[in-house]
Image (tube, rainbow, N blue to C red):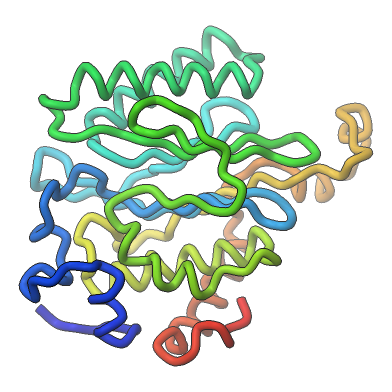
Amino acid sequence: MKLRLALPFFLVLLEVNVLNEKNLLRVEEIPNKGKEMTYILGARCTDGIVLVGDRKVSRGGASVEYEDKVFSDVGNVVIGASGAVGLFDKFRRQMREVAVLNPSIKPADFIKEAEKIVYDLNSAYYERARGSIDLLVAYGRTRRGQLQYVTRLGLAEEVRRYQVIGSGTPYGAYLLRNMWKETLTMKQAAVLGVLIVKHIEDNELDEAVGVGKTNPQIWFVPDWPIDLTDDRYEKLTKEEKAALDTRETSKAELDEIQEKVAEHYPKIGINLREISL
């Protein structure tokens, strides 16, 4: 296996916190492998909420594909899911049914439905699926959007800073902890999330995380100005609405983020605190 670590090797060992040298780098050698394959970062930023996720999934125990793990089936609600692929598929089908039956469902009620579905699926399928799922749920079109973490027990907890789900979590912890600032915007936090996914994939720290030849998923859930009502929103220009809409990044936004990632990636083994996202 080739080592291409952007971080000093001892820092990776420190983060993974495994003493046996044979088990330090690759997730397939760590117990409970594959149950939480994914890296999804959800962050509360100064101007809204951002979700950044990889795309790698394994079907049938061998087939590797690159799919969406962050999605929106209900207006202004974005979900990122980590865990067993079969349970993820079942969860998304059931959430789509909720959306069809309740097209104007309120975010709080949507969260309750998500809690119930996660609990029921994990309770029913844990042994057969050899794993479970958990979620990040963000919803906007409000003065201050909400970010919730739905645990594997089906309990939603508000995220006030950031939350990561998936097997890649420990491998990005050092970067996230040292590069995070409370002043980050959604776009800056997106750069950080993509940096972490790239770091994990390039260095083969977790074979369950990656984007292959695709791009990471990035969703923005902007905060609305305090005086912006639905009526005033309808009077905005197309460009003004686009800036406030819950959305997956446009090609232009993604290109800008990737340029920043390319600029900062060579520096992450030097002094993380001096990198300006």
